[in-house]
Amino acid sequence: MKTFDFIRQVLQDTISILYPSLCAACDEFLLQGEDVICTHCMVNLPRTYFHRMPDNPVAKQFWGKVRLEGATALFHFHKGEKVQTLMHRLKYNNRPEIGNKLGAVCATEIMKSDPFNQIDYIIPIPLHKKKQKIRGYNQAYCFAQGMSDIYGKEVLKDGLRRVKFTDTQTRKNRFDRHKNVKMVFRVSKPDRFIGKKVMIVDDVLTTGSTLAACIQLFNNIEGTKVVVATIAYAE
Ligand SMILES: [Zn+2]
Image (cartoon, rainbow, N blue to C red; front, side, top):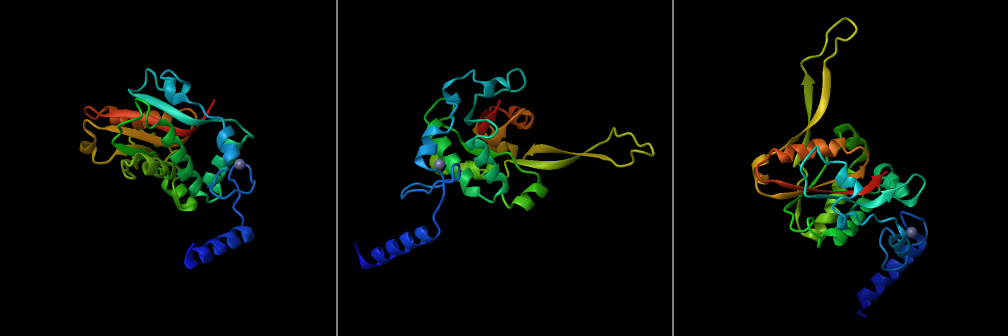
């Protein structure tokens, strides 16, 4: 071992003794070679394997509403369990690396399965601007970035955008003078998606209404195929 490498190793070991890294799911110390989540949790977190089941519960949420090639979620989400801890820390404890890690795990699992192979772009659901300002990052983007590292496909941060939409049919009586301003989604530069397959990603799938609205926008573009992947599925 070269002197420099030796010193670096000693420094790294010293730092990890003084500031040991803990597993983001169970708070046990991470061993050398483990990253963000320990091996024990990695093996035991409740995976759905939905990517192997075309008629899985996530895909079924969209049946009859929008056209998509496939949908999956990496984990089942149950209250009080480790996936909830991970999601909470990702969203509220300034831990974007959890999103990156889970994106890489998800991509490794699904990227060889049809229809999640051969995608062209990865598009995260944008976060409300105010929320992103408070949080400092969009957790769906972190997940997308982790997937991108494995897929080698570009994340389009601006693929979908939130825009203000003013409802013109608002009643204007003296109790209700304010305009009804809603946030809706738009696809930016839609021409670039003609004939492409996009993977839309988000953190937790609950009702699926946000995702359905976004998928619908891509359904309106000629020849665009859509797959969906989320970190967790809450039954
Ligand atoms: Zn753990």
